[in-house]
Length: 458
Image (cartoon, rainbow, N blue to C red; front, side, top):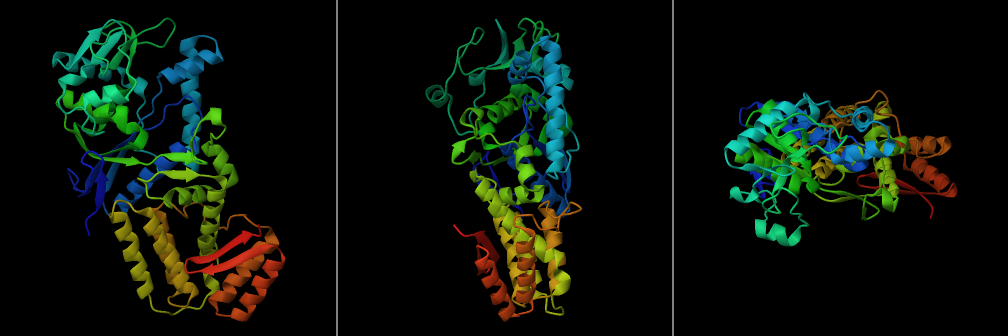
């Protein structure tokens, strides 16, 4: 079966055909380092980590670039609040939160990108890119900077499926001091007093947000590359403007655009003002990285997903069932046929080949575990298959990956493990006895096709 992805650029599910197989080039927008990284950042990062792992497991050689925005209005605003010399403070803010986000991403078990360019390292190349756009008539110098002339590009709006007139109606646009058209966007911002700045043909200033990604991606991955990824919130204006800059400079740019859905918290957009801002560090204090990854992968990457602590606890219970199974495979009978294993492996790979459908891929793991519980296949072979497939999802990689999560008191967990073993050996009398004991302790135990579900009495 061919690998197929839904390309935001066309709105269609398409066969994935890399430019130079088995090489795959992938650029994913990183973070702006002005604050701690949150679980919305984590979701996107996990999605594209799984994409990379899956492509590598499919025998592609992936070159993965993820940028760091280390000069930006938000960084400057944070630095201004912290006081002192603004340029030094901005550099310190960016440095501090770069280290924090790297630590958070490492804790999530993410593969490090092959290149992690910082915006401030590419200023000179951005200036050259902007000069080329001016020469081509696609950009102009205004009173307060250099702007891209949107209406000079007939393809503008192709990615977000909007026409310029619709953008004028639906978006809040500002004419600005130097714009010829309210839709035009900044390529270069002339310096304000005390702010970080670099010398350019247009005086001291700094780059706009969009030009950094177009410059870095085409410099590191060439004028045309295979995949550009990011969150759904980046489609407009950031990715639309990235594409516009590239096309304006005569570069084909990204062939496939993939966007993960947005993450809400308790049904609302995450915001510090609403008190629902959840950092990666905070989530990982409650549950291990595998649990957070499993939560994200339980929804299709293109779908919106709502985070609650209860949902994360549910993911922990699902992970616990898999981890406990891997931890106790030696207790089960062996010697069964492995047709169920082949079936699960085929289902797993078919799911990921079909637009990276991780919920269906996870279902294959649950099915395989249930098959062992019902005596349909060999436990050790099944455990090996679950672990092998799970690793493509970035699961079971840490030293204590198969240790059950501490969701229950130790005496309760011991009873659950004992009951699991009894059920595997078809000792249903013992299984029922332990269930009754757990019920008396205040726990509801339900056996489903996907495994045992345990919850406290309401």
